[in-house]
Image 1 (cartoon, rainbow, N blue to C red):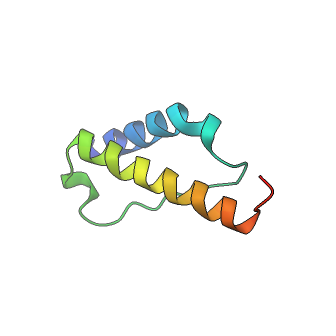
Image 2: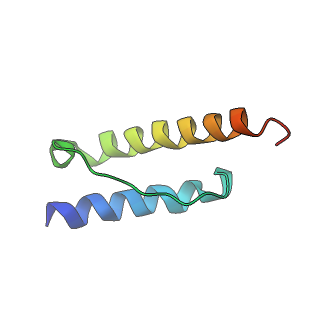
Length: 64
């Protein structure tokens, strides 16, 4: 059940941010302890990940 909750939150976060993200394929690996986070903390963590992804993509392809 915890796995499905985490997956649901990550999918929702992606859905809300996909229009801001670069066109790349993603693989999400859940690390130990992720199931202990509250949903709000998991959303904040995913927002930080999306931000890092955007920054790395911009750095790799500066004309965007």
